[in-house]
Amino acid sequence: MLRPLGWLAAGARDLARCPLPGLLHGLILALVGAALLWIARDRFWLLAGAFSGFLLVAPILATGLYAISRAIERGEPAGLATALAAWRPKDSRLIVFGLLLAAAGTGWVLTSASLITGFAPAPVRNPQDFVRAVVLAPDSYLFEAWLALGGVLAAPVFASSVVAIPMLLDRPISVMGAVLTSWRVVMEHPLPIALWAALLMALNLLGMATLLIGRVPIVPWLAHASWHAYRDLVELRQ
Image 1 (cartoon, rainbow, N blue to C red):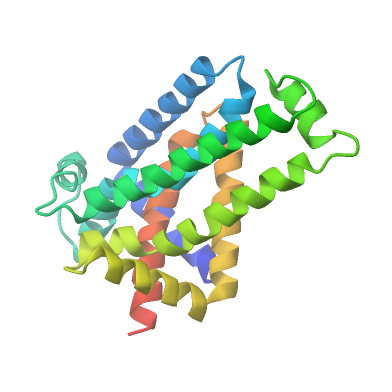
Image 2 (tube, rainbow, N blue to C red):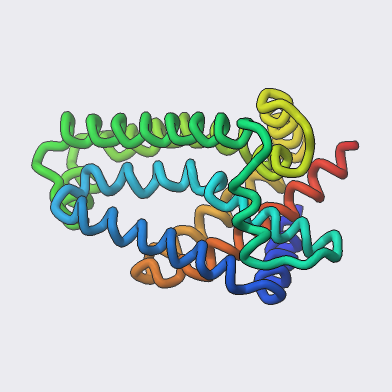
């Protein structure tokens, strides 16, 4: 049950051994988050879905960091070139999977925006409006419906990708094969995977709550830890 804490510890060691690529990844994603904040600064109904939808596609953006953890594991040199090389795959499997995640994220952004703008009793332009008109709205289950729909989408996406992306990088397996393996892992180890999902969500929220500054180290830390989750979970079931 506590194995996810070991993945976090291993991810921290990888980040300490090769910090530059990871911190660059984190900085870029923090800047993307800041751009989202600026674009949707007076449209919190859009921002709420955009940030949560961004979490759905974040695993594919960490592909280069999985490659670094793999190199460290093998005792090979690891650096920025290692991460960049992972973005030049010899086949289209990672591209296909990334497009599928992007479609899921876009679908949630549109669903979230439609739900909030269509059913909120007042316009939602800022976080205060969201709390007042969605979270604390009297005689309304809008917030509960928003969370439930988000969970309905996020749970299968997470189950499909928890080990699939590192596996596609690491092995000659089809996208469907990687997704099915990911689902089998979730079904065989539901409690540790549930804890892992909770840790991922909590640490990502922490990164957002620190004005996105915390995302700079948290993003690569979780990416390296996700590689160790894959190696542990998939090797366990073989």
